[in-house]
Amino acid sequence: MSDLAILGGKPTRTEPYPAWPVHDERDVEAVSNVVRSGNWGGHPYPGPQTAEFCRRFAELQGGKYAVAMANGTITMEVALRAAGIGWGDEVIVPAATFQATAAAPMAAGAIPVIVDIDRETFCIDPKGVEAAITPRTRAIIPVHLASQMADMDAIMDIAERHNLIVVEDCAHAHGAKWRGMGAGTIGHFGSFSLQSSKSLTTGEGGVLLCRTEELALKATSIIDCGRPHDANGELVTMGANFRMSELHCALGVVAVERFPAQFAEREETAAYMDEALSEVTGIRILRRDPRHTARAVYCYTFAIDPEKFGATNHVVCAALHAEGISASPGYSPMNKYDLFQPQNSRLPVPSAFPERFEFEKMNFAEAECLYNGESMWLNEGVFRSGKQGVDDVVNALKKIQAAVQEEGVVERIKQAAGK
Ligand SMILES: Cc1ncc(COP(=O)(O)O)c(C=O)c1O
Image (cartoon, rainbow, N blue to C red; front, side):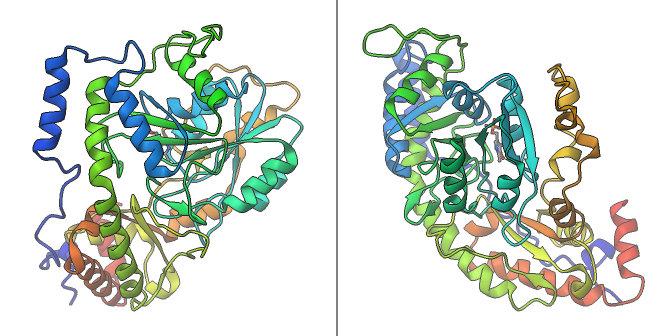
């Protein structure tokens, strides 16, 4: 008889995992100082907190030019616009990511071209990128997903051969490194979200790392209502107010200070998780590329082999949740992602290549197979709760794996979860 918590048994873990974001008196002090200064907003741009945050963030990632802005979606739209990409251009994005990666090109007037992912890494498949290039392709947005990094050597090689702009979507990759280079410093741009779930957060916000000063000045002008930011005061652009406020940047200065210790703790605990998970029947640890030299753990991803484990990821997530461990199957394929609504964009469907807008007819087999069977995402809090936090996950998975061997248990879990 199964003792799974979802079927009325005792949960593996009763203590909640640590909450995020963490904060202390330093945050209170930093925000209070800005309040007292009366200089709360983002105008004139950049204010002292904004300049300091940008300097520290660029240093953290090993980049040169950082521009703070409203969020980690606008960062990608601004990057594309600063590079002169817009109406009718095609921008390649992966099939498994948050809707923002595909929505940002549309906001710039471009068409997102979705490419399948590599099932071993969950990141964009460079072979698919190469195959998707047309004379209209202008940019690639690889996403460093969850705790993985896209193959940046292959992406940059393709970009150089086809003269394409690369915007790394680093919303999950604060502190990550590829061959010692910081995420976001390899392509022309690195886009970071600072939204409250992110590993380095200011509540809301975003930072764009730019490869050149010229691109950074253009991006600054776009987010500052088009005001000129070049030395001669001549570069007026079409822009809007996408600035980040001094209050948020003050939190960012403290967050950068705290970040290295948090990063190290998550990375060390993730290494322990790799080892511990490899003992569980039917679980596949993702391929870790040796060039991926520092791993950021926004979420930790691994895969279930439904045949060997005895259940799919959706069933396992429901059972895990009841065991006191929150987990999710991740993103559905972009063309089926509820939040992605190209039909509402009012972009005219190009008559020469209408198939680019037939999202409902597209099929991304690898992303589909992951979402509907294999992929598992664990929350970051697990990686700030020591070995016990990891052991609880592994014990709960072993318990579920043993229980689903019993006849009828999978059906009972589905019923209990309302699926
Ligand atoms: C992969 C990815 N890209 C972009 C974003 C967008 O960031 P923001 O919410 O700051 O606009 C997110 C955020 O949740 C994300 O997960």
